Length: 595
Image (cartoon, rainbow, N blue to C red; front, top):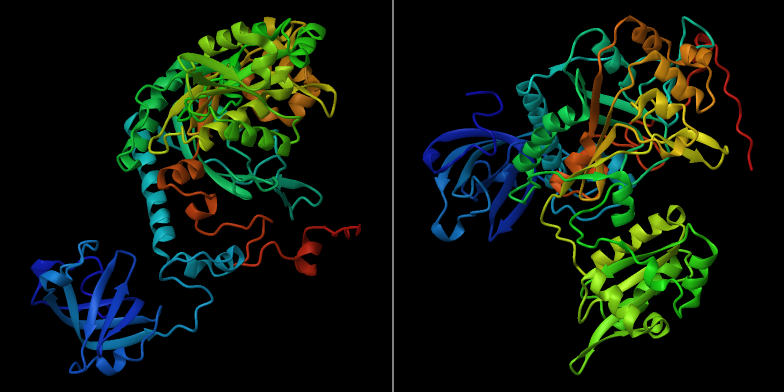
């Protein structure tokens, strides 16, 4: 028999009754039932119940073991009685009667519990991550993550993509975040950068003639912590295709990602045909370019109903500024003054002056609008709003006014708040969509200039003619995102493969041709020598896994994450370098000034 095990802790079944077997694993818990000891023995694969009664030669050893000790158990497989069968465990019809127990490794008193998975301070969980990973839910999440990535690789290969690995040490890139810099020992005073994404390399692969590329790519960004991204690093399914338009990318990737969700959704419905929503429409309907379509609320413009009305706050705003619009946020079932007041109080807590509202209720046979706005604008306008929005008895509507560019985010947050408060969001499904036709440029308020809205290597709609126009902010890009349940899970575009277009696009944000050649020389040179039309995208693996396992935090699907201060509490990183290391790298730390 093998030194440590003949079976895993998930393998034994009723067909093994009568067999002598050997198991090894961790003591999950020990229970004393009237002098008979029951040990739940756990390994990577599952759990088996071990029994040691006072007559067993293993009983004395069984009395000494404690939680998370590693032991080897030899014994006989016996069937459980009908009343003791545990149908929640694959091994629940049998138990192992111990004849010999060997302690392979004792465990000190645990700094955090494994059994039961109670809430515990995050700093302790991260410092002792090797114990945290023994917890059943986190362990399952990590295993599921590897299964999802394996399925992605398999499905990408099935549709003709080949995996290529791009460099980790590279040059700085304009991906919109700070680079992690790596000092060069051989070239003192110079630095490599860890890739924010393999963007330029995958485009160079297309120029090199490799066509359908993909990679499970590590990406590094020195960003402040965010709720939907781990500090430091993340992984993406990166891909690129040659001789394609954006519809070709959508047609290739939509079935693939839908299949991934269907495979791992646990029976929850997944969108069959992903709607394609223009960016401008998404902003106006949902107040976000990553809308949660499980929330049925769709905003509408109702400016005409307030123009010249008795509600002077809105009427005067409309009359004095042609950019002003009034947006309505319909809230079915929200027609109570208590709910409307709660929404108004929430808006004020967000720094807003308030949130106007109307709610409808039946007075006898008549359906009437209630609330201050209804009284001010009158019955006819109130009923016109209700009719436009398809509302009825017991429903409400909230209103936001101003220039949409300044209030749309708040309006979107109010839509989300209303949907969640009223339980309108169907949480037992996955709703996916494409957001398309993103702006190519945006206005940078801090620097008072035009800047790229997204990927600077995207193809502008209208080409060179559009880039030469006076209205740069009206240009759309062949840029697209995939969104699921309110999370952006992928972003991509058709690329600009023309050197002239590339230079003109960067000139519009203040960079010269010399700047382009210096900063993006590899790509710029490549475009001089026959670059095919190409496009692609990248899927955020961490977010996809988080959605599929139902986790609330990205740290629940990552092996060894940093904390929110970008510290690795387990390994003690970042840490000071030795003076000898700094001398080799020609680096001298500059002391930080204290406030």
